[in-house]
Every structure is written in structure tokens, then in C-alpha cells.
Length: 482
Image (cartoon, rainbow, N blue to C red; front, side, top):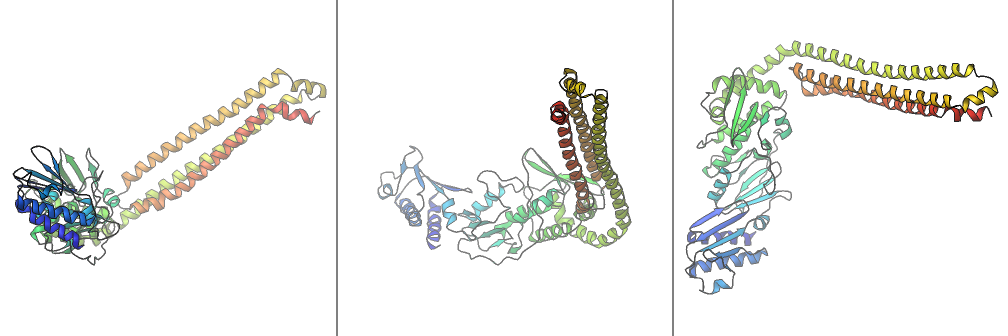
């Protein structure tokens, strides 16, 4: 790690000679007004330290002419007085500071560069391309940072800081959050509280204030019913006692560590169990307290503590009051399940009855047709007659048509019944959980559905075999009378 630290120090030494510095996520750009002996000395130090690390050399150019110069050119004064630009790729350097084997490592050469990057970072966008995925371990090394901070997945540390001991925390996964909130945007959105949570370190440190605000934004989004992105700005909607929509945050707002702590506490409590009910309790109070001209983050900072306290206090009473309603709803769901199960049972019986009816019909029709020709000579003439050949083909086509009509009618009927039943489940399900819906309705019906499809397959095979036998009936019978 020491060669990397030496390189960072060399960058710090070069900084006073740069008129402009752009510290991006993947590269550092430094520009100076004129090259001189002192600047060349510091640039050469940067080149030497990078060579010691065994990584690709940075790109150094003369701005006016676009000429590229290397370490050898820095030993001469040929380009003195010319404006220069240094472009340094940070990914190989960050790789030398990796703290965890499966992490993405970012590097910033100054606290100011880190803060500027955070101000342009959107934590609700789904990551694409070379954008780091905060749903996985991410470590950000920041030169000049005084103390480390972080959470379960995100660590922000000085370059030489050791790995911390992090306590586990049971924040919800993205799919749990998206199961509770509705997102509406032209771009892909993803809310990942585990990736942005900050649970350790000195969060009151002004150096990490933009990061605390970013984390608070993500936590607050977990506590709304709807999130919309309108022309690049986010708007949140609360549906409690009142319905209220507001911007997600104020541009110049500073969020305290205490607010972030309450937000994390609220997210943990809401998603611990019955999240729909718990979120509704929190929203009932928040939708009354938050003013329409406030942003969501400002409202959370001022009123979330009281709303969470009231929600916890009333939760037990609400659950007791809703027990009767819950059992009533479950009874209604079970009635719906029974009627839906009866539908599948009826369909299976219809398939068996139809197969039996068609098979017996064909048998009686052919038998009565042959009785009149039971004389051996007449019977032999009948088997080779064009009339019988035409008749058995018509009967075979009837069998296939009969099964095709049954298949289309039953399949369509079952498909519509499934769709209607699931739609009604979503409409009527106020007190029972998604697990109740899955375990008490959907899983038993799946067994009935598989039974129906099995009998549909067996019936299809039987009809195909019966149609084939009817089509080839003269050839099948002929050897037996020979």
C-alpha cells in the first residue's frame, strides 16, 4: 500500500501548481497554466510512482498543440511555459487499495472531489455500464478524509485506513421495497437501502455531509407509497389520512446524522413484519404533519420521530382490532379458493366424460354399422369399400375436432378464471399478507391446475390414439377376419 500512498502524496504536491482539477469517478484531470521546472519535477514524481506500481502511465499533453509528452520529455525544458493537462486513470490505482475481495473500489484524490461527485450521483437510478453497483460491496477511498464511515456494504475510508468491524443489520432488499412502493419514471429506478445505509463512524463530520444526505434520501424513499421522476426531479407521494405530493429534497438542505438514524430505525421497523400495515400507520401521521411546501426529507427530519413513536404505540391495538377482519377476509379467500378448486375438478370430470362419451359413441356407431353386414363375404367387401374408408376418416376428424374445441374452451375458461381470481385477491386483500395469499390460495390452486393439465394431456393422448385407430380401422380389423 505504501507506493500508492506515495503516489497520492505526489498528487497532493502537484495540486498547488494546477489551475483546474476535475476528480471524476474513473479518472483525474489536472490542468496548469504553464510548465516549469518545479512543475516538471512534481509531474516526474507522479510518473515514477506510477511506474513503481506497474500500471499504465498517465497521459500528459500540451493544451495548445495537443502534443503528448512522456517522462523523458520532463527532463528537458523544451515545453516550459506551455499550458499542460494530466489525465490519470484511477481504476488500477484503486485496485491497489482494495479492502474486500468482492468489492468495487473507487478512489478520490481530495475530499472536495468526493463531495462534488456525490452531488451529481443519483442513488435511485438502476446502475448500467461502468457505474458502480451499490447493491454489492463498495469501498470509496478518499485522500484527506479524516475518519472512516460506512454501513453493511458501503465503506468510505482514507487510503491507509484498516478494514472496520461491521455489525450486521437487517435492512430490506430492493425487491421488498419495490413490493411496497410504486415507481413511475422513464428510466429504470431501484431503491436499495442496504447499499446506502450508514451505521458506523462519525456521521457528524462535515466531510461526509453530502453522503449522509444521500443515504437519508434513499431511506426516506423506502417510506413513501409512490416515487415519480419528472424531468430529472423526484417527487414523492404519501397516502395517509391525506394524500400529499412533494419534492424529494431541497438542493441546499443539510441532513443531520440524527435524522439518518431515525430514518434507518423507521425503515427497520416498517419492514420487520406486516410492512403494508406499519407503513400505513406511519403515513397517517406524516401526511397530516408535513406541509405541502416542504420537501419529503425536510418533513421527515421534523416529523418522523413523532410519527414513528405514534405508529409503534398504536400498532398492537390496530392488530387486535383487525383480527376479526383478518379472519373474515381469510374465510372469503378460502371460499374463493374452494370455488376455484371446484372449477378445476369440474373441468377434469368434463374431460373424462367427453372422452368416454365420444369413445362409446364411436364404438356403438361402428358396431351397429357392421351388424347389418355381419356375413363374412359382405363384411370383407365392406372393409375395402370406399364408403367405409370415407366414414372412418370423417369419424376420426370428428374426434380431433371434438378435442380441439374442448381444449380451447377449457383452456380459455381456466385462464380467465385465474386472472379474475388473482385480480379479486389483490382488491380484497387488506389484512392478510402476501404469504397468506401464496400459502393459502395460490399454492393449493397450483396443485389443482397441475392435475387439470395432466388430465388434459392424458385426454389429448387418448383422443389422438382413438382418432388414429378410427382412421385405420379397416386395416386393424382385416387381419382378424382373414
